[in-house]
Length: 497
Image (cartoon, rainbow, N blue to C red; front, side, top):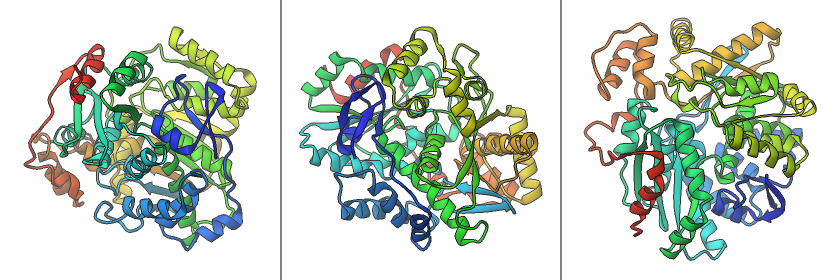
């Protein structure tokens, strides 16, 4: 399997090279030359398998320079206790007869990013050996909340790696911030950036494209790589849980083999829903992909109109991991739907960079509309959904999952489509205690970690151990910088002059 850059189809690299680089030198994202086929017979063969075995089967088709034994070893180490508190790894919770929640928050940081970032360190360290790379990897991460902690935990004390995470100051929840600033490990660094996630992500991309910085770091013995979903090694493991969820629904007799399902995903950087799109195109029986946004509704407008315009107000919401106006992984979708025409992609991306907007052709928009449906949800409505879901079902959900559930309900009301649906639940509600407590009508005076005990008391639910264990930890990282200082912060972190 070879990989292409979305901005230059003449550039072809191996899986190892794509994972090591993270981002192509031309600024493009690596995509597989072809998608592997997932037939009904193949899905049937996956039914009796464990999550780990399903991961080996799905990922193996895209990792040609890794052996089955190697991938098996990585999967067994990535997806196991005590890192995951449920043996199913990504269990499906049935809320109603035809509404199911895919719980992706049973890992060590209580968010869906664990599903990929427990695997990526194994892939990357093996890649350094396979490519004969002598330099150590510096993992550079921009986070809107969950990626940062998951990446820090995944790469903590991993040989030949250092990891620096940038997050928007005042743009993450108290618990998310504490998870990052108290992170253990000798090879980790965390820094807040004044601004929003788009400022942080743009700063990281600029570092990746700055040849002078790259040469300077190479002289210090480091190569840059990414743990964001721009890295194919981050995106590939996410395909697995859609396939696994479908298998679980068949096993639980909620659907029959070859029955179609709809999937609703709370979406910011477009990586999570893109993984579902790839699973669908491989052959998984997914009908509609429902893209759920919060008040930062740039994706909703794009899917409805074909015009992408980031020139709008940015909102800091109670679903911070979705507070994004530049959705990087959308580039991969456009590349695929434009028949891998890198000239078109370069035109769109130049327009986005120069003008903050672009508009796709009518044909391309028609292709998008045939697969995707989009909606958005306000903070006020998000809280009402959390309250209603808990009161009716006794099921507690976080702010991002609530956005998706609300948008799914709007989709069903507007279209009349009652196809069995999977709502992607991306975070444990205890990561957003203040918003969840407010949603269920509870007044509180506690702050920070004290909210965990308050939420447990009010709801009779059990808080996850990784968050309870934050109590008493010392905050190690308190730097706050401007986006213009990010390159200097990186050099200081690595000990560069």
